[in-house]
Image 1 (cartoon, rainbow, N blue to C red):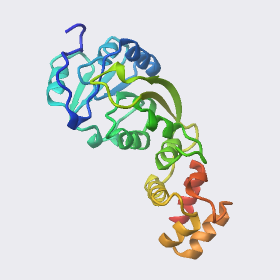
Image 2: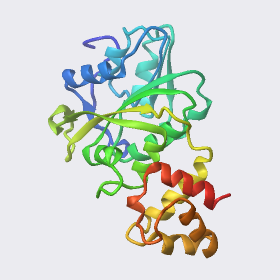
Image 3: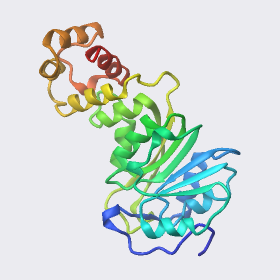
Length: 264
């Protein structure tokens, strides 16, 4: 091992979407964006051989929780104990995010095949998320940052922006990984919105999925098939939304307000 927490790389598993981050400059910038301060509680999703973990270990956190699905790497991190460090051996998609107590900072080089549902869960289910710094596919980063009316704006955009303010980190080329992915990556920073969170996330999620499955249709057409026509049209009118508008023109706040009226 070249540093505490770094393990020898082995062949990446396609089934786990593994692309190991090798660039020390990139891992250093991610650790800097996470901004770990004395007493922080920190989670790293998918530490793998531990390139980022090695930078997190000496920082002044009170707890460091590593979520690792890979059997060998989970055992490897557990074999390097230190006070406050814990290893969760399992799928991050099955982690009980809602049970976390106190504020948390979360980082990870997310596998492309599960990045969107993972961020969907983290942003909406962590009770006191303080900051998240994630490496994702460049196109996914563009969707997170997209404004209403843009081509990239969709259900993921409206959902994440209902809970967090996404910020640009920096682009990362394929050459920084082993094996190199076939797409460009980007780091994004997510911080909680300053206002209240959606009161009924389940209702918001249902509305977003309904609307963006038919994003080229008019809202009146989409909603009148799923709700009583009078209620659908009244909800649009009350929120000042034209019946002929399409889903990608609505802001996250408009989706929240519309969901509250439609499911009342």
